[in-house]
Length: 336
View (tube, rainbow, N blue to C red):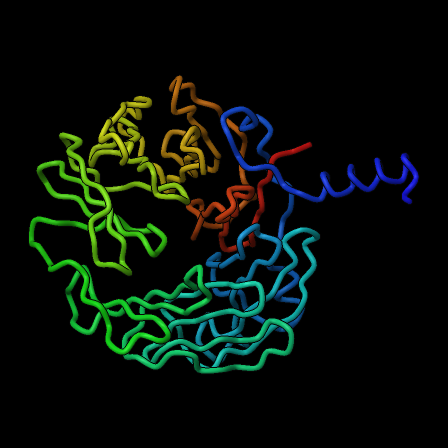
């Protein structure tokens, strides 16, 4: 039998080991917790390519990219411990890639000829899917590797296939009046029209899951993990909106007054919108409470030689914000 005080300490230790999901109730405590400095990459004789990265579900593993100065800029994967900041190892990639996805065991990279999985432990490579022009890759919840491809130049939608499928599935037909919002993680996609129509798609089933009209052009936005809501801004950055896909309600959250925002992100519960590097607060992380519209300034992210980050993402479990630029990465979590 475990003594009472030992059990209490164990429970507290387990609780402290878990990261809180970012919500409106704790957003004031979101802060830069850990920096992954590219100086350490350079100390290993490598040249960091950019602030592009990929992370696993809770950002406990993060991968950035570098090169030996001769090979392409993103030809070496740099594996980091996202909890301690330790640089764990480097893996040489066999070819250029168009997209990447990190599982608990492997780094998946989409290339011109398919998908290669690199084992995070020993660096071994395995071709898991062979198809031309794979530009986006992800692991489905059943463990199958899926890709989106663009066999024809100039198309806004291509083909989707997964391991075990005999034939690729065609996505929605291209429409000259339809645009696709970028940075929407698969298996979802969001398209919009100049008339303000917004469509939420499932790439695997080739079906529209929801649609609504927002009476403006939603050119830039982000969905939450479950794709229940879309945070978006109009072309002139006049206002910040939140669309509820279930009800079709589009709500004005806050004025932007023309301030462009480099990255918009939506928390899992759709109760907080994060803005990274807004034009009126360069280098800052800003949040808006979607219910009240209150704007919260959370502080500056790490110093960068190029002001605008190369990438900013929320972990899929909603517990971490990772920002990458030319000097390194910074991981934000809810402070205790």
